[in-house]
Length: 344
Image (cartoon, rainbow, N blue to C red; front, side):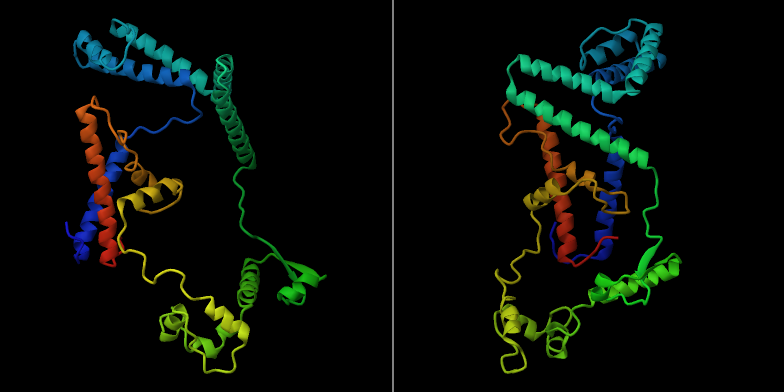
């Protein structure tokens, strides 16, 4: 598909189809259960799923032998021979899972301690150090979780503010003020904060960049001839005698250090993958339901860079599909950039 000019209707149709497919695929994914990883708990949950499939197969009339044979292709082990036995084991597994879920933190600590002792017995110092670091990080995380739960839902908004009695909000006066009063009325609090912000962010008033000598030649968007001259290292105010030497030095420092317009207007797949790897996945991105998890799911390869000859063809085909989807996603982004368009 060419990246030339296309209509907004076409771009929206592409984006809408991409969003729908991503959200539909997310519904097919199984979420992580709450709590830390406990190997015994994972094994029980896996066993529960298998037994549940056996029960469902037998209830809809599938031969028991066929159900067992289908499950045995993926999982080894012994399974109940009748429907009542499957139902009984399923009930027992549910009970064990609930017992372990009541205190997964203690189970996790016990399991990690056993892993640590095994590494020490094997004289694996690097492995033991890695487990110690994991245990330390998990302990800190659990402590923070408990502190957060004790804190509860507290409104962190500003409800009161102390101001100088004479309402002089200047920085110099606030540093030495000894007479303060508390404002509690929301309207007064908002007005005081706005006035203080205007004073604080307006401290540059009167300096050279805020005077007509500069602002009449360099606008807010820096899209004037004078702005271009400054970027090229020329002084547009060379004929003026009212500019201090320190200001001329400041203007000289604004000369560009790299070629102008050197940033490409096209994002490559490698650039996109690099950004996704460093972008924190919990960052809020869009009210459409799309989040960084949808994008990050495409950057993880299913096979190594140099796959061995015995790699299953199905896995190679899956990796090819991933590459095509990743390229399509980046192309969708480049279409928006080249056509100066923002998806709704």
